[in-house]
Length: 231
Image (tube, rainbow, N blue to C red; front, side, top):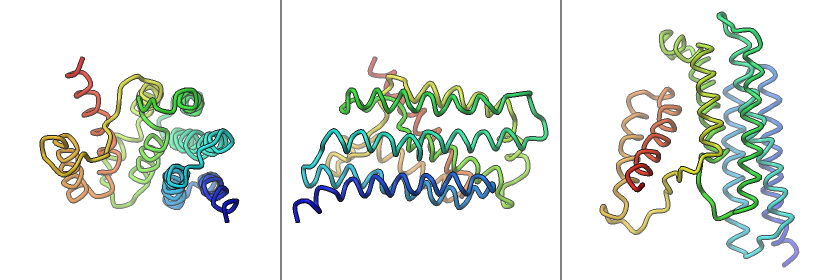
């Protein structure tokens, strides 16, 4: 029974990797919606493997290395392929700009390596949140329900290039992102979290699918703002 308990976190990590591979397969046919669903499952399994390993007190070097390798596929390679395909299919193209998308993979690898060296360091944008941003962006860019003018803004090579730049910057930045671990239920101790959740809910109700990338951008902005206030 003890041996079975020990392998559960690693099985969850491998399920994260499996879903990341599925996401890549569906990206080959430009099925961004199914790819995004697979990415959501990867995020869930990534959360569960850490939670379970801490719960059963089975954190070890093998699990840590396996987790990073799985994350590199699910949250390092996947966003680069998404951006590569978006840039590749644009009508107004800048020659070879799509190859810059793989800087996301490079900086994701650096992010994961830094985290392995110092697991208590939660500074910078996490790779799952970064991947969720680009997955949601791909759905907005290809959804038939999204207004054309919004798609035209997203599907600009200059906009995508700047998103790549800021993605790479925040992945390895020293800016601490807001933690969603609530300290009780008091307004005073959780003011930032409550404000963020209220605004996020409002955006979801009004903008629907377009709200997803907007919420992540808002999350980065509010984290940066409160970091500057503390300096």
